[in-house]
Image 1 (cartoon, one colour):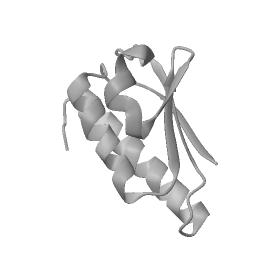
Image 2 (tube, rainbow, N blue to C red):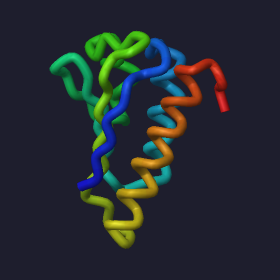
Image 3 (cartoon, rainbow, N blue to C red):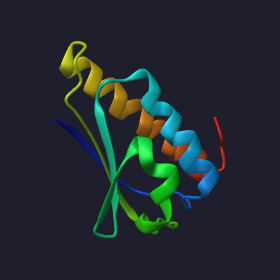
Amino acid sequence: MYIEEFRSPGALTAEIAEALAACAAGHTSRITLAANEHAVNLPVLPWCWADLRIEVGTRVTVTAEGGRIAPDREDRHALDEVVARFRALTSGAGG
């Protein structure tokens, strides 16, 4: 399992949740976002994003585990991709 924790540069919105969920498509890793004592699996984020209540400065934890294609490399790559995309989208950089 790979874990990264950081402060969100901006708020999570419905549009950002949709874009983040798309990151799961290329991975077999289970990717989870957690904040404010709630956790959501990435594929269902577009329906549950509001439960996380992510605003500027919210502590966010992203985990990736269980990838079947070279698990250590896939989980690490999945984590890096989702965290980078999250930061870009919530900071307004869009990427």
